[in-house]
Length: 203
Ligand SMILES: NC(=O)CC[C@H](N)C(=O)O
Image (tube, rainbow, N blue to C red; front, side, top):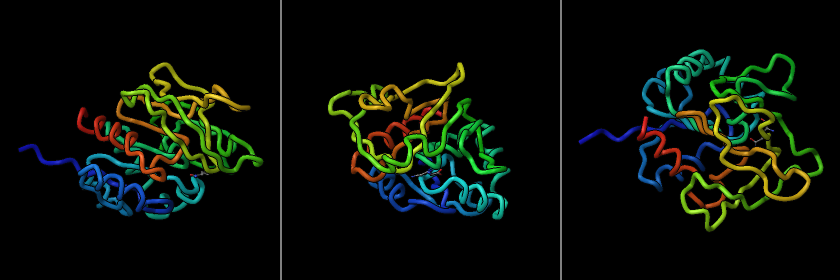
């Protein structure tokens, strides 16, 4: 029998448990990752939402930033949600002075892109990569980034459908890397996590 992959959740800060709960519900083995040793033990990694400036500082302090960069560069599947999307971006706009990322995705991500007046909102997204397009995906955005620019190797998976931000890119994939502006771990809809587990199994 092929051993089951272990999916880590970066546990420096943010909504770690919610992701672990969804993964467990899908039958995946999961591990909270706070140290380089724990990172060595996982086959794939979810980077949760939270606050990317804090996550970056803690990753530096815990000696995790370089190991994370190395694992992602060497092909480890990773999924970043919200602050996690910012962490996976090669370039960010609206970051604090000196803010670094893990990188790996050839995208430019704008922090807090939806503006102050809409700190938080929900929207239904058409997300064809999830297979059936019905029902649409209910997405929760909390001080969310959007993807400003994508490189050639990046697939756009979903855009905001309506309103002032219509057309803005909120889900992308580049090979084994997946990122969403929103928080699928909060809605009880496990389809984005299931897509990531398919990516993990493919890799
Ligand atoms: N919900 C979130 O992850 C918010 C992200 C946060 N605004 C940041 O810049 O990191």
